[in-house]
Image (cartoon, rainbow, N blue to C red; front, top):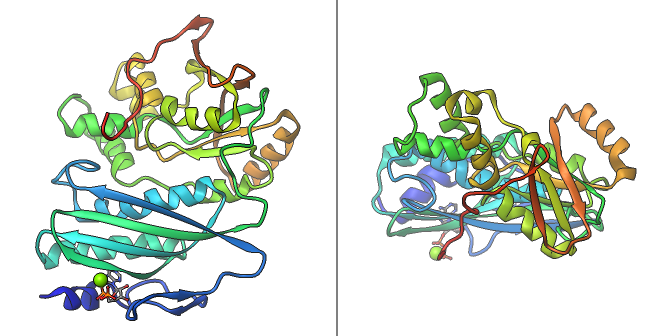
Length: 320
Ligand code: ADP
Ligand code: MG
């Protein structure tokens, strides 16, 4: 099978189809239409075998994660998914692998009504680059720079699961099958918080998705907004499986600094708190308040009950 056969068989016409796509896969460019009054949000993420996922990761998980991490960026801007392109570097044409990869990819794409509109297919080490685009109402994108001292800090879902999931795959933890399945699943199949992202428009003062670890990612908001933050470590939301799998200290360390959570971290002013509660209740989204912003520029204070708390390692960074 050659390049065009791969595109034709596994990627062309398999995707969820949208009315705003004038030209999808098959020409030199895709042509799409952005509705009046909406702005276009664009994001790209690359996953490389052995860097972003263990080399023996199932194709279904690789596909899900490659799209989910991009959807998570759209969620963090309050954007609604529309289109994506896929640049695929493959070491060989493995039809069973491509079949599993494309099925999983299109399943997630269909769930979020996002259409594959183009890409590139080349021969090389396994790597997946997705560029995703979505719509956000003018003036209502969830940017990193809108936070103010006194704003409350929230996160969606639970933190630290994926970090311990990776540790389990690396043989670092001896845990029950049930916990292992849950935590590895959180690593391989992150759920992008798109519903939360759109619900937070006009309510959150700043928002970011957690990909590199909480202490690392919150610094982007602190820098962009010129604020500090006080985080109450004992308030960080932990899953039942995480608490069962590791000592509580390891669970909080993972929640603070492990990557791959893909939860949203956002800030809300005291005045907007009532609106937040209403918006979350009607969308059935669970969030936890973990601290408050301060006026101490870019200073991050961690406390455990009433004591200062140290993080053992900061988040993931390439070239570090
Ligand atoms: P070009 O020669 O203009 O670079 P290609 O031959 O790479 O175009 O691709 C032909 C068509 O197939 C284009 O519309 C391109 O967007 C699409 N395409 C290529 N690879 C993929 C892929 N992995 N997924 C989706 N569409 C793809
Ligand atoms: Mg090309």
